[in-house]
Image (cartoon, rainbow, N blue to C red):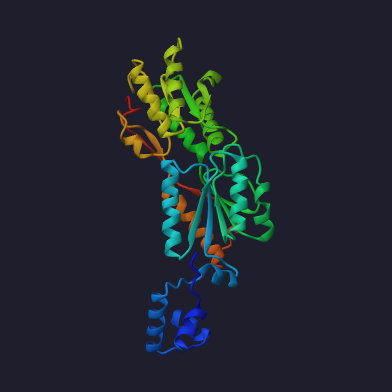
Length: 339
């Protein structure tokens, strides 16, 4: 492997001091323009690369933020990451992004990698089976700031960025009730995570407020995959008294379920009104277009990254607030509209 060119190599060839070369490459005003031009030209010719990482370490920072998400193959998470990238790039920070694949064990390994990579701070959305935050204790002890977003857990050392999932679940269910639905099925993810547990609570509160029974057979805990949507639809087709409303906490799973329901002879929204969650692009590609909760992913990513960078730059102390609550919106489309 060819040896990396250093400022000492350039200095030796030009018969200059390493300090002069370093200052020239950093546009120091004490170096005249002709000398700068000569040095930069020689550096380019020799393939010199600035060791930004080492330079930042001397300043006790790497200008790098770690991001751990459950999955990268998610439309919602893509919009979150786009928001983070936008803010980080504008502030001259880099992102190291990893996925836990919904595994607490993998999340622990990711956290260790982020720590050894000397990230300045961490942005995390938790895996579905994460029970505690013990694997982030090294960050807490060292005072490395961490923000949890979307999938969160109460922790005095962290700020959480979320929407009011309970209220969103309540509004989605209430909308179905207002369309005349009286037997509403709820399809959701693992209720260890706040997002799914709170949406389930909202569903139950809406039913009880409208004096409708909470039936356990109408609550399905799944992984919200395409196959889960098909399986739910096939189960509905076999039920002697099928639901007339369906609230699914994922647009992707809801779209899959709608397609399978139609194959089984159900009319949407005539037989079953459907509401999804996230406002993913698929919600406007499936027929009929899917009623959904708009989850502000881009805004969540921007606020998470900006809050962390402001903290790192001494402009904000993120531990002064436990929760940042973002707005959401119920978007009514043809899949649920009966009246």
